[in-house]
Image 1: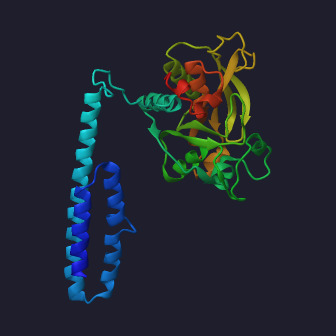
Image 2 (image 1 turned 30 degrees about the vertical axis):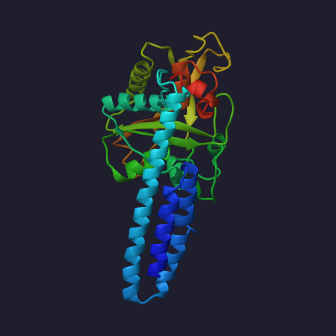
Image 3 (image 1 turned 180 degrees about the vertical axis):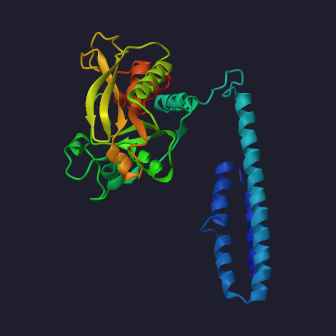
Length: 338
């Protein structure tokens, strides 16, 4: 066995020294050191030898492998240097040409706006909480005053895994999870991905949402309205048109839809705002007493509000984008603009 190993090393070194180019060196590397190479085949036979002999020959095998690898690395480097020198002499490689810069990545516009939203609310004293994207029906619906067979479930086409597990349709379940473990006063936002079976110019099956809620003694709808006005004006850097419309959400009462004047058409009407001049960007309202009952809060002592905003929708308005699907097509011509 020892003689075979020594003879293998001698043959390999001789052939490597005679190699005329990188391709031959690479072929010899595979032949001797590859997974099915000659040295590997001999190594497999060592397991059949007595322990003392196996230990001695194992060390010899590792030493031979190391020497061959060093020889191969040196030859490959030498051939690479020679190729560069030959290219310079022949004029094929022009070192006066400007270099090619590798393309640099950019922060995705949705991620950028998500960060801006978080910064605004952190500056207003809120904290950030997260929850699972694969959620229980209880947290996604029932604890939010949306029991089974409630008509409000028809408003959210849901991806169910089974009867009790689903992909969350909003980040509101984080509100329940957080309130079950913490006591008021609370000021929290919950950003993250949500999922609904919906796809058109302004909807995608997966999108991003920020849920926000505040709970304390004496919280009013006026507090909610003031907070959202400050938030939207901070986000769009100007005094924009905002309106509150009465609406219905099972988890809040009273409830409102919040619209802003369409920034794409300046209120004149376009396909994004469906020619209305206004675009709905979030829903909000005072937290329903039944939701407080789900987390064992005293609804006669505490009050609070909650709201949910779609990040893609406000990103479209912020950058003048008229098709939400552009965010997910991975077209560099689009993404390089941000």
